Image (tube, rainbow, N blue to C red; front, top):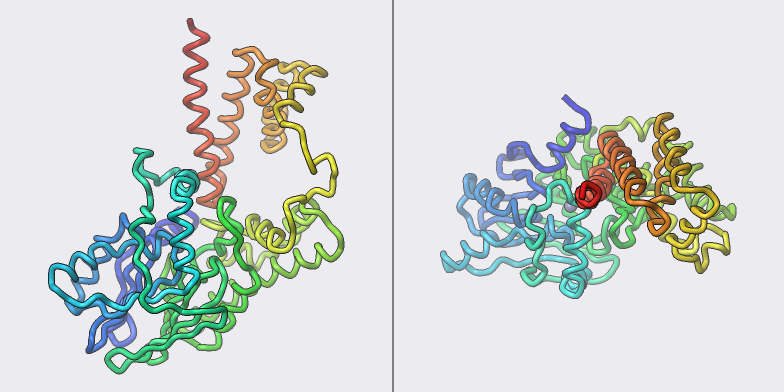
Length: 431
Ligand SMILES: [Zn+2]
């Protein structure tokens, strides 16, 4: 069985843990995945999952071994890789063990500080990005940045490398930029294993996430090329399926690197041709090669190609992206809509939106409905309600057809907000 739904199951780590190589290496799947390596002197743990998965991952590790954790490595400081450490700390306190070394890049510490500064903001955007799986109680924060675990060994600088030996096994860490500026990946030659963190996923790379800060397409491609050189036999990705077999590992890394190069180079080419974002975006949508579109490693279940175009453009360009001076200091969109409603009444716009909807031209229909919704002052309650209901209906159809978890959640989140507004308006109209 394959397809987006099956893909999401793996994405969320809903598959049994896997033991590989010499029986001392394990993948503990979760949101995200944990790499576990047993040595005669203790354990090396690469990433801990989201806080909500922490106990499950901890218990799975303790079903395999009772050795103490000696090293904990954060592939990066995202909440699904560096915050599910609670049960480990509790165990250390109970047993009176020494704290393990925590390894992270210096930018990981900056990230934790940023999370503390922007806590409410991050909770707000994450409740949208994860709308379909977020706790119902909005007061329950997904992450508490106050409880981050500070690295004890910092990898410093852009070319950072760090190696350590535990129980005779050599672990090699490398820093590269990609999804984040604090990424670390691990190579264990003796076990022929790479742990990639989010530099590799069972999805199109999460680059250009609509809510999140700048990401790095070219550095990402180059990082994957460095990994290919290792000729690994086993690969633990940040999310999704464990990959086994030299050819499969190479294929997963190569196709992802190629796709990153493609998006990067094609956007750069068009920037050099003096094109604005809209033209670049729509041209890029026309030329997306089938070999990427159809590859299981690049299915758009989380990040997607459409977002990657934005990411590359934003890396090199400022916010003025239309080339139209009207957009430099624009009027309020509500005021523009109100003026449009003076030319034609709301009913004619709405009728037109309905006809576009009936021809399955959902996106254009949405633009026209927005004139009615944004021109609220000029629109009667019953017409406004009809417009809201139509928009909601279109968005539901779009959400159902949308493969990207992030894009679908943005849409679903809006539908949920409309639901409330529609109910209030219906009650008001009945009275
Ligand atoms: Zn992740």
